[in-house]
Each structure stands twice: as C-alpha cells, then as structure tokens.
Amino acid sequence: MSADPSRDNQSAAAAYWRENIRILLSLLVIWFVVSFGCGILFVDQLDQISFFGFPLGFWFAQQGSIYTFLVLIFVYIGLMNRLDRKYNVQEEE
Image (cartoon, rainbow, N blue to C red):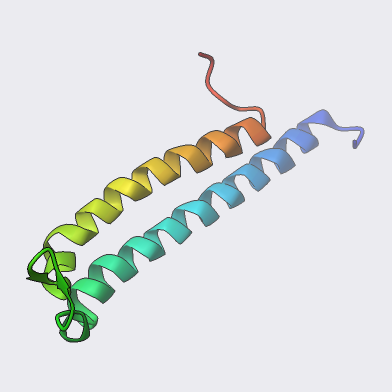
C-alpha cells in the first residue's frame, strides 16, 4: 500500500474501468462477428447449412444476432457482477 489512500483509490478505479472496457469491447466484437459476419459477410457459406428448415445465414441475419445479443446481456451481467465484487463496488442487496 502506498502512503496516499486517494492514489490507491484512483489506481483501483482506473483498473476497474480498464477491465470494464475490455469486457465491453470483447462482447461487442462477438456481437459484431455474429451479426455482421454471419448475417452478411459469410451468409453464402452459411446458407449451405440448414437450421430448423432455414438457411443458416438467413437465420443468423433474422434471429441469430438477436439471440446472441440476449445471451451477451446475461454474460455481461455476470462478468460485471464478478468485476464489481473483485473491486468491492457491488450494489447492496
């Protein structure tokens, strides 16, 4: 520990926000790859596969990115709760 508690708080806050941004960017990259990549860029290759009677590329463009987004919301909640506990900034229950 350093002699200045405010400096410790500032460094902890900076570390918290670095990890927060890393989590956020990672999840946004996943969503981008699923929505743009699978729904637009790789649609021709994915359309060769049938999923519930629909071409997989079409399914990703219409439904897959939405489902992925919903899953990523819950993943984000879990990761942020763990990060909050790590830095002792969790909300009171």
